[in-house]
Length: 177
Figure 1 (cartoon, rainbow, N blue to C red):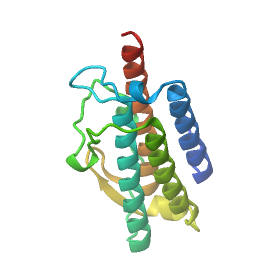
Figure 2 (figure 1 turned 45 degrees about the vertical axis):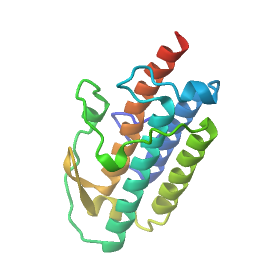
Figure 3 (figure 1 turned 180 degrees about the horizontal axis):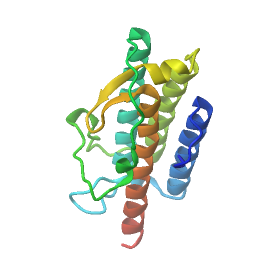
């Protein structure tokens, strides 16, 4: 998981992404298909919906990243503090295209979606020949405005950590029933 005194390199970023994902998957390891589809409350997402949302966001960020790298419009943006991403007292409604399905899914389907979007992200990141490109290209973010591509991937990791906390709460609630 991302540390505040971070090593600013693609390798450290990928390691952080993998650490967060491993933690997330270990949280759901012992849950069955029924449990991952239970909503802790009517107005909350089920665990499978959290997984689906993470997949949709990762897929979208990967597409945007590939587009920005291909476009290669140099526009250096300063580093921003993205820790607000972890603050769940600041509620944000997911954009419509990032909202998860209401359809029930098997746990393995959710895991496969995450594996697919992660493979695509890693493929995009490993295609970067010069890491400098991640710092010298950027895109608008709905909350943080202009972010360089490196920070977009940092955001992705923090976003997954945010939802990992949500997932743990959902898991606790459904196992208490």
